[in-house]
Length: 178
Image 1 (tube, rainbow, N blue to C red):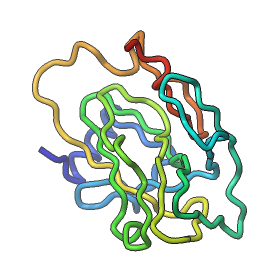
Image 2: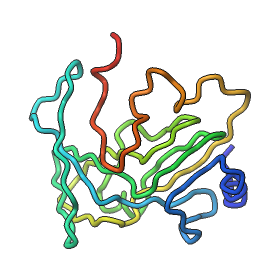
Image 3: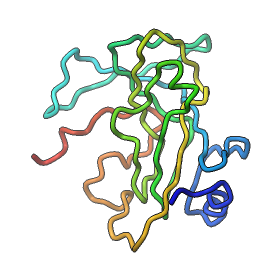
Image 4: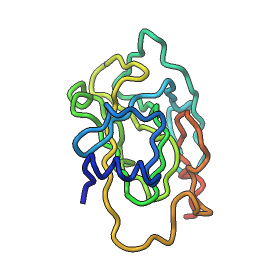
């Protein structure tokens, strides 16, 4: 079941959902709007290797915006730091963003109970489009969990994305044992 605005507010008051910075005007009927942070990143190599650490270069989005190009993967980050301790957060693109041909995630739209960080965005575009820091980029939707949780993400020994950072984080696939 998806939480409504009243339920999201109740979870924020209990401290089981944390959003920083929080702006009441970003709370929708059953979601919370998040914004594009000031940093983007791109991979250094033209060919990525799933078994190796693929390094990225960070850069700041200038005040006049930055034009994203098709055929290139950009890693972005939300302006908002979030914590989710009792629900499952899903990040979806806003319809207005999708209508500009911007996808904000390829596969990583679901968070875990216990995820405490900024969200890294996997941004691709279907045509050139200028984006700006702080523009609305997505919305968080919270789903209830049935049953107890034994393995909160922020307590997992092998969690690869627990280090708090306000910059996009590259794939850590290379840390997996396979």
